[in-house]
Image (cartoon, rainbow, N blue to C red; front, side, top):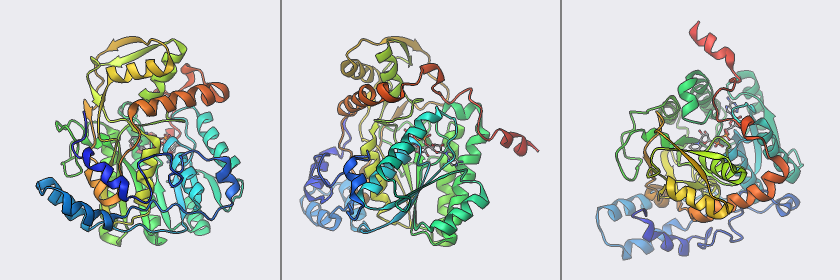
Length: 435
Ligand SMILES: NC(=O)c1ccc[n+]([C@@H]2O[C@H](COP(=O)([O-])OP(=O)(O)OC[C@H]3O[C@@H](n4cnc5c(N)ncnc54)[C@H](O)[C@@H]3O)[C@@H](O)[C@H]2O)c1
């Protein structure tokens, strides 16, 4: 299925100084730190610039004025120009999948990065250590890349960090992720996600942060019946504790914007995958299990469809948001089209070069049946549009799996977390909250 606004995307590419429509252009560094980036020392700055004003005038004259395009034009007229130039960015959850990928991009374009991560064991910590090791090897200078290990809820620790580092830009990716484990143990989610985000916003307004961008999730759409999930939808019915924590963060973010004029943007990611992806998620699991000749589990009849978003596209959307300090916004970041589970398995089989052994199981409680992003708002206000097809993204992920993961990491499937049954790092939380 194709997103209905997708046809207009090539117009953006032509006007976008940051993207010629070819995701390998020099202006769009990959999310992977490279030897070149490490050697830079670096003064380069990729502005994630979209000629939005140019885009507005160009598209407004040519588009047919149906309701959507009128709304789009009005939105584009209020689009902010990106802040171009050096930033010191605090990236929370910077050892994780998305956080480490954003950190690599920011460092490569010339920004300095401060990472904070508690390195919890939601999935195998060696994967997170490997992410940090790659970044450190590429950027040995501690002034360019500072790494702190600790809990974002730890008040003394975080206050000291803000006092010494003084980050002006915050990219808050730290969270307990995963829907099913949150049903099993909601308390640790409330701690890291709600308390953690509140604490960071408290510090951000006190230290005059210019823009606070945080990860929300498509899970907030819960049991919505819409085909394309739009930010305008009411999302008051989260169907898992994880989704509820993300919705709570969006509400608190509004409060911090209202009370303190903190610029806050929440990004609803739609199933992110790619090299160094999370081992508890289907794209990694399917590639891993098909490659090893192990059975994989298909929940439902295979017709359920999701919007899988390649990591480089998500990083692009995050950086575009960091560069544009909107007072308060929520954006969907997805590919804008869905792929069925059956299609997904076929694509994995094609790139792995092996037939999958599939065990069909009933649908899981808490899972949303269909997720597909309406990305028109992100397109209008950020100039965001995904460029990597699912087939190409899986091809690249399989390539990473075979060339890097199998050779250097290759953790036994039994020790890879599915997020369940692992001791939470904050086991004391439950007793504290019950007291
Ligand atoms: N990957 C996806 O498909 C997806 C989809 C929707 C939303 N998200 C959100 O995007 C963000 C990044 O996800 P990810 O896939 O990189 O997950 P991840 O688990 O790989 O990364 C999150 C990191 O945050 C750290 N962390 C958790 N609680 C912390 C705390 N209290 N203090 C310090 N560090 C803490 C973890 O150790 C981990 O390294 C999360 O907020 C997640 O909820 C991800």
